[in-house]
Length: 207
Image 1 (cartoon, helix red, strand yellow):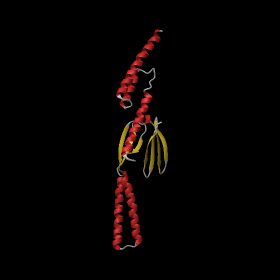
Image 2 (cartoon, helix red, strand yellow):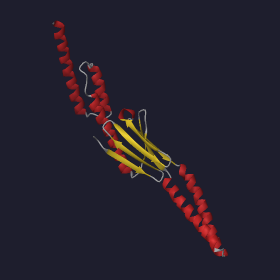
Image 3 (cartoon, helix red, strand yellow):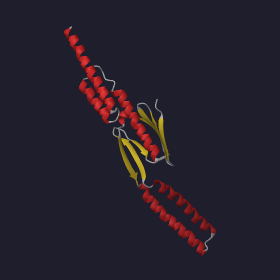
Image 4 (tube, helix red, strand yellow):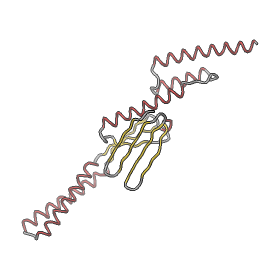
């Protein structure tokens, strides 16, 4: 059984995605809840949608203002010889706003990738743990889907029409489940089976 996985962690959530033979298992933990569910390959697809979340930009800009105010307060306090307690409060505020600013800065222009194309969507961070790892995992997901479709849809029923087999093989070729040479070989096999089937039907009819 396939067991490739991707783990993404931030301060607010953790997500684990595991590739199985015919589905993905997803485990997501946030501060408020824990989710565990699966996405069947037939519910996913091959579409990739990329989004840049800029919602933290405004928070970062506001926090910079508070940092500037804290620095001004400390500078003024030293110049005016404020009491130690007042300076400590200003230093604490600067440290707090500095930490929040750093956190908001890391979330600026956050890239999100959505794997879709079916009835369900898988959301991933584009650069967690890094872009190369995420890109490789997405390729592994798509490869697993292609293998699943190939194994499922190339086992034709004996009574299936030749035209239907050709349509399925063209679709498998289009999504990359089978290569050109494999497509030609399967088409040849289907033709031979079709002719053989006609011969058997003719013999049965004559009897």
